[in-house]
Length: 234
Image (cartoon, rainbow, N blue to C red; front, side):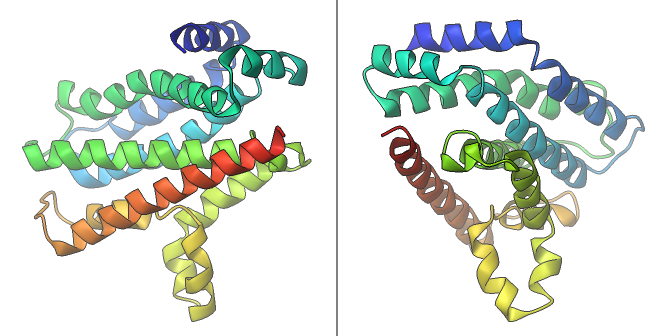
């Protein structure tokens, strides 16, 4: 598996497909912290959303590195479709690690926040970014590694999912009908809902319930994607 990950990283770097999303992410963070004394939680919410967009982009790029013939050869050498899928996901996690560290620690190093970091703020910053990273991986995988990847408008569909999930709070207020449909979209507001307030987080039952729901959504989503990937490659 480690050899496969190294191969994927090498292919991704040589393809130069990493340049647009990485540059855009760095520019986003630089602009976000261009001024001093910015609020902590809302700033981390903005960089989490950026991570959501960028990780969807990176995921779709990494899943489209090989042609079909090469992909089947790799699956054969890895002795299974699931190993191939997990190898791709691990590669994406390696790629996202420096971006995650940059998003969290750049404003701290540059002293851009108007308040002081606490253990709870560090924990929630990590939790929010990781959640949005996984959301991006799920959306990107859906439209690049399943039968939906063969559709003409895969990229547009991925953007649609992202936009709807980010606007879900407003959409749910329009009608109860939409509220029941929106549960299939990534629960972004279960993650960043608390980040709209002051730069303090008090651990309570609401946060615990939201975190459990996010974890459940990710688990079910990953299981469904494994099923859809195996069905596509059967």
